[in-house]
Length: 208
Image 1 (cartoon, rainbow, N blue to C red):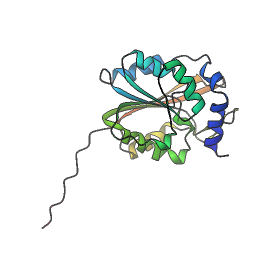
Image 2: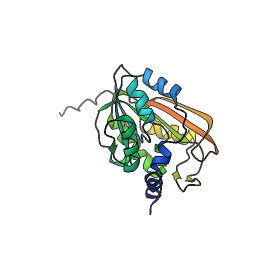
Image 3: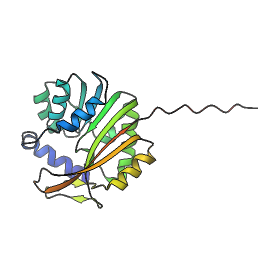
Image 4: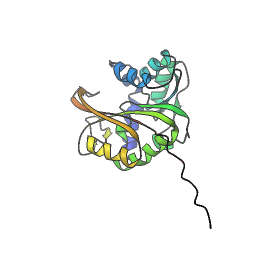
């Protein structure tokens, strides 16, 4: 069983418990993200979990497409949202200029480090020009596992910043905060926001 399969298996087996756990809505981060978008903007949530963040964004009048890699977790989110949740893994994202914003709170932290550049490229492609991308990770220097056997990429701010710059993201903002995780242990969180800039088309070379 691969790292991704082990992590997905955890969420499939514990979907109801995980979705119904006591969780503080990240309202300040959500509001900052939403305030940077036009009214009624289209938003893709990557890894919607129990659907609480999507429910908040929908209540604020935004057009939200929730997506999760766990079929069982998607069922839990559908109960809350009353709408279908797309069951799709991050590496299967293939939308093109479809969303004004992409929200990935504590979800892409399960992506293998070596796979993150390709996933970020898919996110970049899925955003409209000027679109906003929010994501959060557990901070660290070496990838590893938690007590539940879930894989984490544990990124440093320097590593993530270099990745965003190399992938040509604009308006990059990174911050670290102290908090906890599902396992109840103290956790340092790394938050990021970036935008997809409007880049001038390359002029075709004239032939002599």
